[in-house]
Image 1 (tube, rainbow, N blue to C red):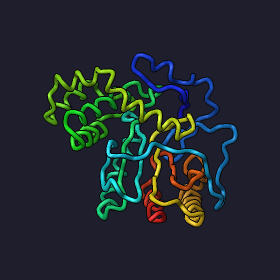
Image 2 (cartoon, helix red, strand yellow):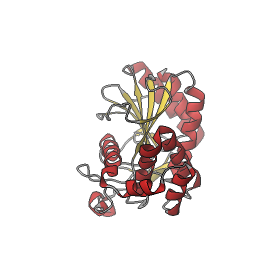
Image 3 (cartoon, rainbow, N blue to C red):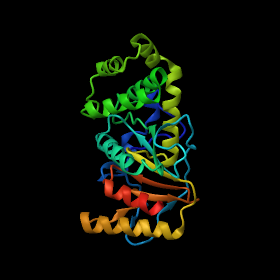
Length: 276
């Protein structure tokens, strides 16, 4: 994941001020379907030892973009970038997760924006466009518009900017109002809020997709150890690799389980089933 300044958030005019120069990157590694920056003190979880970090996220509210039961005891809060190729794949996986686990109201999916302009210059504007779809057409329009972007983008800034307007027209949104919304400074507020929230949760080194599972009751030590042991086993048996602590960790207060990268559906379901 690429570091960003924890005090700042991106704007279209000032985006260069919000990126830590690439020269400070310690090392990059492709792990579990995402790019991570590994700090010098990064260590791997080689046994049932549980990785714990002090972090929190903004509470999930009715203002969030949610698929599923808003009161679900398990909420997957995703921080994503529409031009990230791993996010494109992860988007399909989370739809499948909700199709499987959302029917009984036990699991919900919350979408938040984490456009990383160091890598994807178009992502911030695309995030704003999804918010304009929500403003003009409601939550149904937001999710349809977002699904369309992930469906058609080649990723890595490959989406034709004209597709933003085309998507609005296909949803029956008033095009003039949509264009005006995209250009308004006020529309940036939501995206910047999400970005800053994701930045804080990742300790200032965001990577996408980044996910936080929020639970209604604190995760027990027994459950933490079980999930960790199961994940270590999968990484060893299927990938002949150790489970790096940057891939999965718990919050120190037991409210959250964070995981990075486009993990296979079986791993996410493993977490969910242990948390139920």
